[in-house]
Length: 362
Ligand SMILES: Nc1ncnc2c1ncn2[C@@H]1O[C@H](COP(=O)(O)OP(=O)(O)OP(=O)(O)O)[C@@H](O)[C@H]1O
Ligand SMILES: [Mg+2]
Image (cartoon, rainbow, N blue to C red):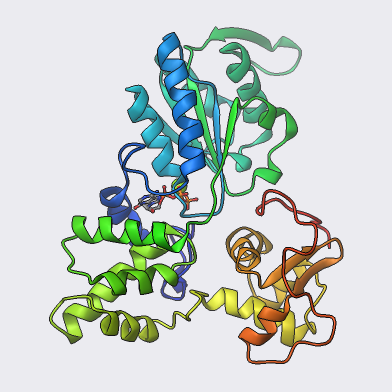
């Protein structure tokens, strides 16, 4: 997500993709649904969609994968293609700036292909409109020429399955969302699932890791496999440089301390947001854009990367008037919460999709 950011080092813990993740992401990617750890509900639903289509000998419905970064959306897209025995063509919303870019991709598809559009919420409007028709009728209208002389040439598109990934399903337009036959809502992983992810990665990377060390790392991975894998690599460095290479509990703890990972797995940005919310705004309510300015980040980063986990950790609640710190957040910073502080982030109405924007203008 921030491949060219010079402050990459600061983001060691961010769930967003870093340049250094590239090779590891590929070697550690699960290859089949049975290989895919966690997300049992999503996997079961997806398996039904795929088996159903296979049985009928048709292409599966279009599939939308929604959830915070690093939970396995790209991996699932590749698994979908693998399970169907189809080829996958990969592109992303920002790359589809002109309708022509999309038309070129669509006209090259072969029957049964999977077209994967990452960050589909960032697709440009003209391309999005072309996509509606392609998804529904497997047809596109290519406009040739300009002004009154322009003509539109209808082109057939081979039946394909669109797999879209988004960290912000709330910013997808209604018509686009409606054209997906199945939406998979990816959830943060439980610690025991991350333990399995770590065990699998340690095997692949030939790292010797004690069971309790795995549990320790998993507990601080922010519910995110990408972070678990990244922490594992950092702990391995520590084990190799400062010890004999075996990742024990003591080694894991010391390494995580060096990397400034707190016991809940909060990263620099998470802590900055909590600090701003509590020390700067007395616990809220405060709008997400104001919070973002206070921590010097893009509102989208605070909202898509940081907030979902803080909400899930019970530290921040989203109320109609803005973001509010819960009593747990005050305690986490070693402060006494004021009387009347929310005791949980679940006491208030929160939207079903944590990445969805409640009140953008707050
Ligand atoms: N269920 C899983 N089991 C094992 N490893 C996983 C799982 N999900 C994700 N991973 C690991 O996490 C890494 C990141 O996953 P992936 O690239 O699929 O996430 P993503 O949701 O596409 O993230 P982004 O939104 O940043 O594109 C993968 O390389 C893989 O190693
Ligand atoms: Mg991805």
